[in-house]
Length: 170
Ligand code: S3P
Image (cartoon, rainbow, N blue to C red):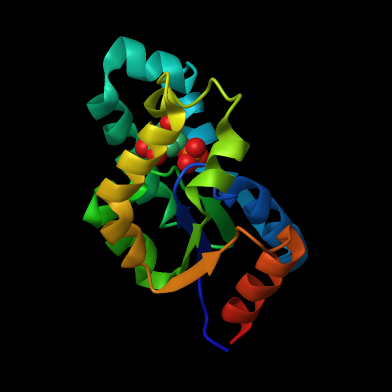
């Protein structure tokens, strides 16, 4: 059995990282960490306010520091924010000792999951579908480079967790 220090879930917004991460952590007796919660705690304000007051670059620098800190702490299932792949150092650090898995879903499934959400400033647009497709398009190559891929569109949460657990225990 490979000895991973952490399980790290990558993927676009709405691909199920938080839901799946919580369930995987519970199943494996690991601690669940949502990186967005860590960033909100460190910034002392919600994500839309960080973007509005301080800009995306500031958000990314808090995110980067969170990756450095979390990749050094074993025994966790980490749900990353969808933009963590934008900095290749983040992928490198998490891949060092962690099992890295990318969750994906079709744009239609993503839209259904995020449609009424106001907590994701990058999706604040009249035409959310257009925004999802253009962001996905610009990041696809980065998500595709993560070694383990699970399309969650037609799987139950239990089925997705089953796959992660089997990768972890391989
Ligand atoms: C972002 C995704 C969000 C959050 C922030 C930026 C992105 O996390 O980190 O709004 O750039 O894709 P989720 O993927 O958990 O929604």
